[in-house]
Length: 93
Image 1 (tube, rainbow, N blue to C red):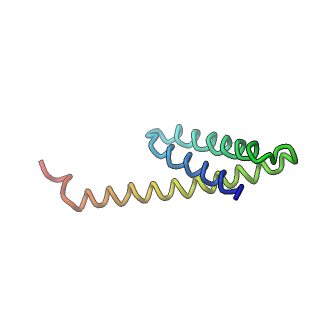
Image 2: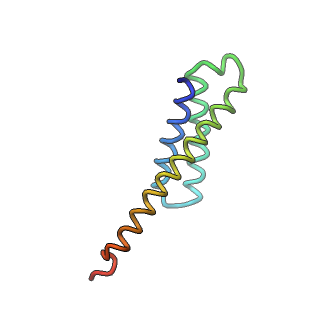
Image 3: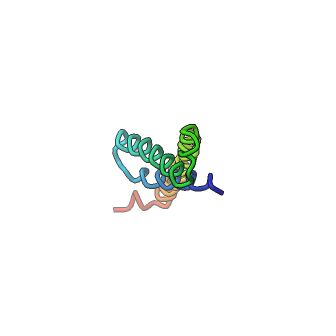
């Protein structure tokens, strides 16, 4: 159950950064957000007291959760764009 937090924190980071319009800023915020999510997960669970090796695992889990969220948000936005195109709302004046 402890490994759920970094995945969900990464998913939150991934979903939020998808609303940043500038690609390089979105990428930077995603990387920094996943690092912070992994660091906070290791700190909250107390794994940092045992070994710093757990930090890389939690960062990886946050990265995976973030990438899944980015894929889901991109898919939803793409489907909405296609639906708007085929509904004809773009062509009406």
